[in-house]
Amino acid sequence: MTNKEEPMDENNHSPERKLVDKIESDAEKKLQAKKRGSEIIFGFGTFGMIGWSIAVPALIGAALGMYLDNKFNPGFSWTLTLIFSGVIIGCINAWRWIKKKSLEN
Image 1 (cartoon, rainbow, N blue to C red):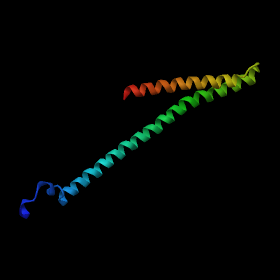
Image 2 (spheres, rainbow, N blue to C red; image 1 turned 180 degrees about the vertical axis):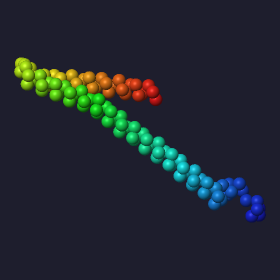
Image 3 (cartoon, rainbow, N blue to C red; image 1 turned 45 degrees about the vertical axis):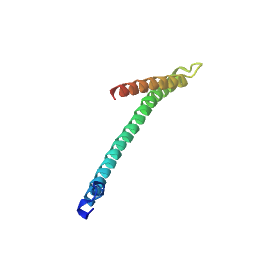
Image 4 (cartoon, rainbow, N blue to C red; image 1 turned 60 degrees about the vertical axis):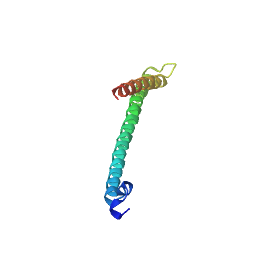
């Protein structure tokens, strides 16, 4: 066999082929990194949305409960009752939001 009749396998290791393979590999890595980055940002957004959807009703319940406790002085704590109610309402809202988002995807 002469130099001009090299097997096809050796042509796959030519400098041009190595360069093309390297560029394809780098491009794929960048696309995957971009995809992971957007997933991470979406995850942070989801955690934030869930956190606020639970925290806001709980804080509103605490404020309203403290007002009612100071105004009427009942035999039980409106503050604790309304904080608990706010957390329950917030959890239901978060669950509905996650269910809606999962159906969209």
